[in-house]
Image 1 (spheres, rainbow, N blue to C red):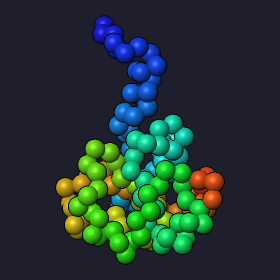
Image 2 (cartoon, one colour):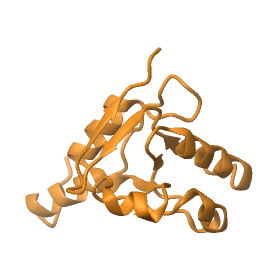
Image 3 (tube, one colour):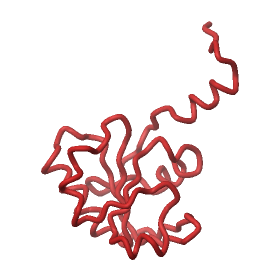
Length: 136
């Protein structure tokens, strides 16, 4: 048995930033919505969350911790996306986030942990959100 030398508080903090297992959704490139919601409750910093809507849309409300890179500006920034954590794209209805997923596949196919949310998002000014799953 090994002991974490820095003690329990440091261990707990280190565990919070540990990589997370992401479950894919049913459509190519999507993240399972329940898994995404769990990540956002328990360990949101374990993923790179990118809001690909335009700045004016983003400024009206987004998910807490999301970085705003409008889809029109994304291609130039793909080379600098991180490789150490999963990347999840979000937008209002799934179209731009899906486009972003496929753009990353074209530009940096070596990035394997890239996902998008398929569904309608209600994004609030306080950083909270609600996902309405697409009809099957």
